[in-house]
Length: 307
View 1 (tube, rainbow, N blue to C red):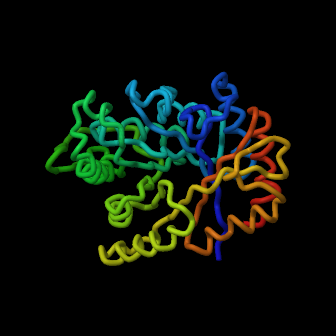
View 2 (tube, one colour):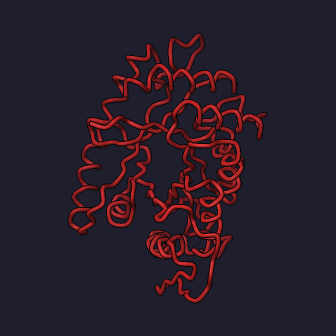
């Protein structure tokens, strides 16, 4: 059985009150650089950045309005890392024309030497769609065609071609092309429509909030739908685990935080592998950027070898 890979969503770049730590409010580019370099050194498979264009006032208290642009953020960090992959988790690609999205992410893949993973999702903030002139109620349909159009626009052809109900283009050249022959597309979401989309159109699936006991059923459905659609390529399954703290914290980290000895953490996380999960996404509890990077390094040297 292959080892379980691990990645993380970057702090600082999104600061929802659901998960942001206090120190992130005053953090900035230097902190992100150090975190990215630590991930590169510590064996992390990917770093992830979120996507929101604008947060309506009604949601600002909970979500905050701090949401860095994922392309700018990942491109910035590509320049200070060498190995770690760069994941949009997730890009709401339906908010933009596929040729615009392709131009941005193809350039990112080119500049990073082929490290892009394009994570996509339907989105959930209605006001964003309305402000950008996109039909919120049809966002699932928009995403389905956007994925098809992006498969072409991020492919090897300098002059990609797509003819659909929403988007129609040919004879328009875009260079640079991605460094990868096929940019992996991972689909986010846990609704029945999202799981079906991942099964039929994705190279990977990013669950959204599924508890552990629900994952086996979801993964079984994903694989069944993929087989029924005649898709032969294997699908990467990622999972978001509980918040983590390597060792015994000297402060209150919350009831849901998984903490303790490295071998205990590893045993708990290996349960994901037994379910058919290939990559876990970890989130570390910390009171400072230094504590975070110490946690990342400890995970890479003490927990990861047991995965």
